[in-house]
Amino acid sequence: MPAGELMYPPEEEKKIKEAEDEEGWVWTQIKTESRSDAEAEPALASYLYSTILSHSSLERSLSFHLGNKLCSSTLLSTLLYDLFLNAFSSDPSIRSATVADLRAARVRDPACVSFSHCLLNYKGFLACQAHRVAHKLWTQSRRPLALALHSRIADVFAVDIHPAARIGKGVLFDHATGVVVGETAVIGNNVSILHHVTLGGTGKVGGDRHPKIGDGVLIGAGATILGNVKIGEGAKIGAGSVVLIDVPPRTTAVGNPARLVGGKERPAKHEDVPGESMDHTSFISEWSDYII
Image (cartoon, rainbow, N blue to C red; front, top):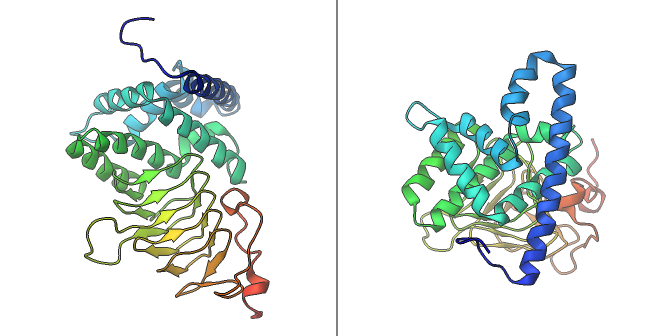
């Protein structure tokens, strides 16, 4: 084994190999889509070449794109490119999460016409990938740089995710404008979050003070979840809801203040995974008989 190369247990090696195969397939798709787009729209040919087609890997393309998106007169694109590329290249878990996030957008959002469209244009996706690097910096005690990157992400994408917040994979920030995620928040795998969602604190309480979002949760547009509350696996939070207490798994919470569809004692439970199905409104007949 070459000097300096990391050794992993056999099971971990297998997972890394599978993730690399998946990444390779997605990257091939992205390049194929970009070549087709360049032929169909020559005005974009130079942009597509410099951002995607001139690069040898997904992490290089993404690092280049994020570097150009987030640079400023004092935070140079070359510095950011090296920063992103080092993080993506050295951490297989980040690359695996990136691929899962690409797949999430492509599968769940009917407006996402291709992987390359997501990579280039989905600010929720781009903000999440930049956050993953900021979080890595935070855990390495490089906090001034993590906070500087966090500030640029907020400025450019209008998405404010504290670098200490922990985010799983297969996460979709759909539209993403106005999303706020606090310092001690945790977001599980296969979660979908719409625009103007706040995962915040309740005031000046310190310590662990932000929501914990389970796997497969769907949070509708404009929802606000405050405090160290737990949103159970596969739960659904309706658009515009204000949630201040725990929500059980596989239930739906709607309203301001939010209440459980079916009632607190015997709430209605669903079998699907709303974070993946993106079903926002199937609960409405059980929740209210109000008809316009």
